Length: 310
Image (tube, rainbow, N blue to C red):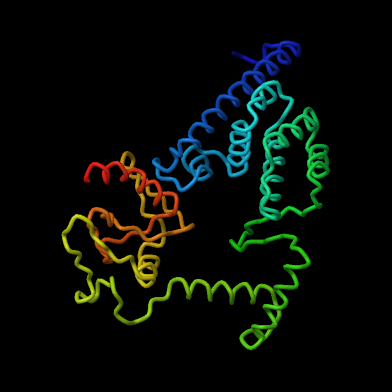
């Protein structure tokens, strides 16, 4: 179609029609994301979480992915949200404001915002703009004004951070800097972050130069289980995990269909390639790093095999 041939009224009708179809399609997308989330299919595709799947697997930007995740999960709690999205009464950024507020409340008070409360505030922000929605949500949940953290990558690949911290956290940082004054000559916050970060990395990845049980470098220490009806296999030592972190550095799960590796660096756990219930032993050759999500997926997938083997 040559849009240049359409008059202004025809173009007006066309854009409105397309927007309506776009909202209907968005609703279908959210329903699909909700189903993928509930069945945790992103794990089988080789992604550690739904966010990474939508960004790296589907192609959404980080912001677009998070807004759709927030909406899909709220849709699960408040089904009437679907009609409001299709009609245009509620936008995705409004939904994200509600979900972020709920997360912040749980983080600070460990109290979950109920579906009824979310439905109530959803009614109050219907057809309102972003700033009006912010005020309504802050007032409804009695939330303080919080500055948004921003992160910008600069031309030289350095990262500029802008964030607001509480008075209590600022005092804790100052106390920590004072306690480290023997190691840090300045009170510069970047020096402090660098020092603490280096210490954490060293603590979590350094391997002591001594033989430990489960270390493949000493065959005398390899645990050989007896082949009986039930087998007791010792767990991996902390040293084994450090060796794996230095060697593998990320989750080793691969999607058997596509060969895509998860590669998440978050919540890494040491896993037996051949499971303990199947007489797998705690050696470095039988060890691999899996993120917590894929470790649980592997367990669920093997649960049926374990039952059959009995």
